[in-house]
Amino acid sequence: MTELEKIGVVLRKKRYACRMTQEDLAGATEIERSYISQIENGRRSPSLAYFLRICQALEAEPWAVLKEALTVHV
Image 1 (tube, rainbow, N blue to C red):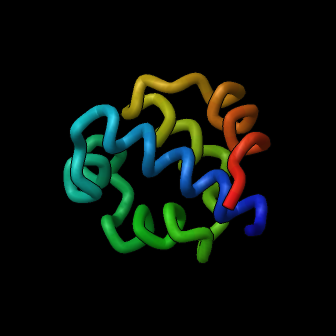
Image 2 (cartoon, rainbow, N blue to C red):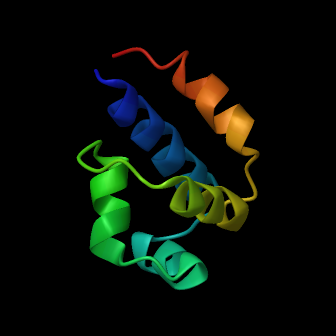
Image 3 (spheres, rainbow, N blue to C red):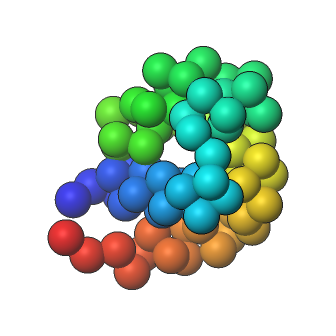
């Protein structure tokens, strides 16, 4: 599993915890839903600005998301 995939797994988990759909998150961040999907599936690398907007919408600290991604195992 790549680092991008691990970050995507954590972001998806955080989104589920917030009971948000990808559409909800897209609306909250003004990022296209398809782009959110690609980030969650490790197919796109979000810019720092997008990463921070997503973390803010999910009420997650960016450093905590990255730290948790380090512990993701397949």
